[in-house]
Image (tube, helix red, strand yellow):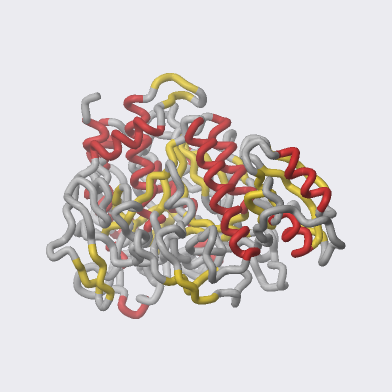
Length: 543
């Protein structure tokens, strides 16, 4: 997936691959903590490799097959990478970032002015005050479905993101504070001394579980499950419970261990479906054996591929349906040619390298994940959305400000936004009035609540997650956490209820100057996958 407004997210990894382990040499560089992934059944051998390399054990995770070890610099990592028991090594640093796009990226000057940034200026009508702005919910029939099957409180939806503003008036009724967890600690500065998350808001630098200092996770959660409460908007499944399983920094960066911990925790508490609107970094495409990369860089990418796949497999086996944003690079993921943005961390490390279909975007192309492309208000695939006959499983509304004549924020996805974030970023004046058409205030109830228009496959994925929650509400059986429905069954039902959409004619569509070609038939193709998700069909389909 491509970067969104929060900035770059990354991982710093080291290591190399060889046929046998060299003798331990002197440590080079200061000690750091590394996640060392070992081959199946080789935990003991990996621990021995750590000791031979001059490191020591910090902790183990038998569920996902890795140890946390402390050692010194590249010499330590290269020694580990040369051992056959080790399949990947990464420092415990940033590896991912949220994939959403703000509608103002590159289009600020062209945006249509919004006449009424306050909901109170709209014509009043029954239901949610901002429902007229939710073209996305009408497209997938959610406005009808949530009256018939709003979703069960027994369904737990995990949002693995930057957090959830659990006090937002249009989220609080469905927010499960008791089960929510924050797996990250804020880092004011990065390793180079540059600002990362900024000053800590609390003394421990660990934000409360009902706080989102970035806003991305709150928007995602709102699309999934904002309640029917006559405030603001309604989500796809307004009756389900929302669980914050935070793995992203305030800055939007994602660390490896929190990402693994989030998936493991979701599985262990009985979460039914998780939304992952981010991709694992610093490599846009993770290549295990790219000749353009050093052995150290190859080992880094193998660690990302292996570690995340193990966490995803663990969650899926425990009954968690896995849904991911496909990405915002306008790229045919089945035919990638060049990667010019990796490694994205530290900043300035990027290089140009050739890539092919053996290189994957994680988690969108990881096994067992349902990946979602984005469409605009007309149902056309959004120009920014990645695509691919093998990679696109479904499509959903993600917004497209440039679709049609001119550009308009109202073609984006409207969902809840934390007031504190909007104030900090200068989108509200001192009185709380929005300064841009991308922000909407609803004061029909007190306190006022705030919403923001955003574009991206990050916004598409939660529509699919909400539809999955409807299906689990209808067909799930009593199980851990409340109800359970196997991920395979959920996936089958999502495909069965989707609205099949054929490739455009001609198949090559030109987005401004960018030509993108759709492959496949109406029932499965590279632009729409198995089709656009349909909440109404999910609410009414017979078993």
